[in-house]
Length: 431
Image (tube, rainbow, N blue to C red; front, side, top):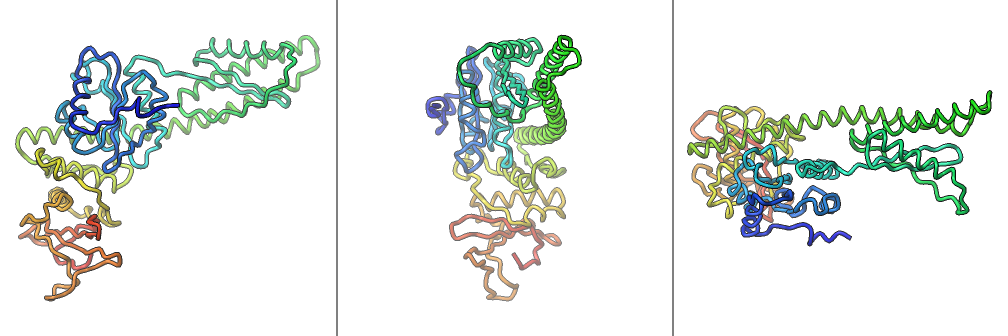
């Protein structure tokens, strides 16, 4: 049984992070380090940690860090290019060469709608790659006739290994035995990676060749006759190969599209990070006013892109000394919030994100925000908008002294949680 507490180190304090940073920067370290971050506001990673421990064993040191002040402390210590946050995971190779080339410490992204097993498999594959060890490879070949069914397992995808396993299994089945036959082994699940699919195709092809040779031998011994059981097995294997090839083609197309989308999103995130770093050095504003803060089509949903843009605005807007006391809290996005950015100019988007950060982090007392309850009309003494659940609608200024100045409308729930409604013009008196 896996004891998670003993094999996964959970970081809780800055002292824990400082110790990990010391280990990471030790040139004599001879084992990779896997660091998994939790999503914002959650203490549970999106990666399947029991599988990570089971797959990696003693191959790597495994750590979990919560997104928030600790992840920013780690980025301050190692540099922005080597941090990890928002549910992603990173693999740091042995030694310290990766400090000179960030591509040597690969980042594995995990979004809210990611397949947890798929991203976990990717994390373990990246760990094996940086450790210089090939991934453990098992090939299962199942062939079944009308009366028999058996399973062959080979420890490698090469032709010689598969043929050796097939031959040994065939010879073993020819030996007489007094023991009752074992229960039929259920057919294996469809292979999950292109590498495994290719290996199974190769192994199945080898098995078909062997079965055909057996048919030819029997026909030579008994002219004019055939072995029905062997023919049935060959037919079954050919059908299986057809199915696996179709699955391989479908998986290849889907995987290529997903990898391209993730690569584009990662490139955009890295460019944002570099822009933030350059602007910080110059003392300027890191959120660009000449281009959109984040391309929506590089995220699985528009709301995911909006949350990412808000996170980047928080990084830029809140000084490092105040990040601990003004963390980005849990919040909700109304159904029309992301769409309300569509008519805005790039400059207005930047201003709107700054306003959102101010409201979410409790800086609603800033004079420029002019926060007040949204009233049902502009008549004096009109009541504020109140939702059935008791939430009160508030209004904050994004712009001033300009035509059609923009405002932020948001609900404040009874428990203090904020729900962002939409960006509107100043003459809008509805939530």
